[in-house]
Amino acid sequence: MSVIQVAAGGPDLDSQQCVSRGAEVRQLGWRMAACADRADAVLAKLAQLQLDRWESPAGRAYRTTVALQAASLRKGRDALREAAAVTLRHSQNVASNGQPGF
Image (cartoon, rainbow, N blue to C red):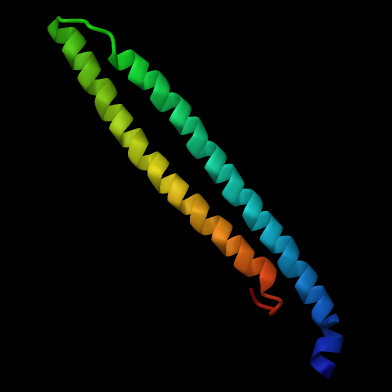
């Protein structure tokens, strides 16, 4: 073991810090995935709203607006799911990398 490692607390301290950081990053990834799941629930409710069969111009405008909002939410949900997956993969790298500076 080098003098620098002994002075800095040794490799075990760095490994423990990486595991702790990995757990924090993993928790963030799961929270992001939970947000995406909540977006799915909202999308289901929006789909129910779109089923209303109002034949008036106001009804068509309403359904169009709901459809646009749903499309925007779907795009955001997809981006959030992708970000959650990347974050969870990164948490594994952080936890398994015992090198300082990560």
